[in-house]
Length: 285
Image (cartoon, rainbow, N blue to C red; front, side):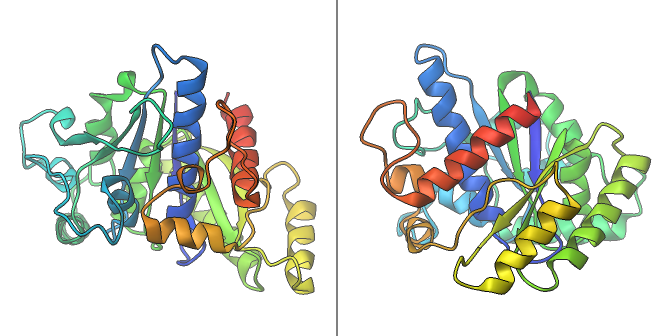
């Protein structure tokens, strides 16, 4: 099994969107391969904004109260509970054509902001290992685990990377992207050298791409030239992706394919995310 973090120190590059849609794609693929015993996918939201969690819990603009659990993710990161991690795990209704095989961990923005500050000020030697300890209990239950992270180099992101086998960097095709990639690679190198030597870079994900902007295509060309083995298929900036987020869905639930067992519908956003999911699956396997 693989534990895949989606990380970048820059905000607004599509980290949460990538986690939501890739986790949904992997859940669907597993459900179709083994309809009687689908492998389960777990989503962990380490970003204090908790947008990925809220999407799988019912949607960012969900009007009813979210389903809750007796403890939050932060309780485990702060050693504040003796309960098992399974007591904080809930099952999402997404993706709609899955087998109910996508789970997420209950969390809240206030609790994650508080634990971020607590870890930063604790000085504890194990401050970066809280998540990996919590996941040890349930990792055997899941085929894959996806982790969303915030746009900052803090203890929450460090915990995500220490717990991961792989990391993906979404990058916007903009002028400062190449510099940002180098900064992220330096950060990952520190994690590999000091905390998690098993961490592998699964890919760089060009996102929010505009095909009509010539400078963006030039940056994609530079990415392919500088990182030929790492660049994943491009995700174009599309209205359907934005609308799916507003509707509280992954793109495969929002624009479903007509044929059973297919990720790709007539909407090109499903084709692009399916291509990323298929490429990622080959890389981690």
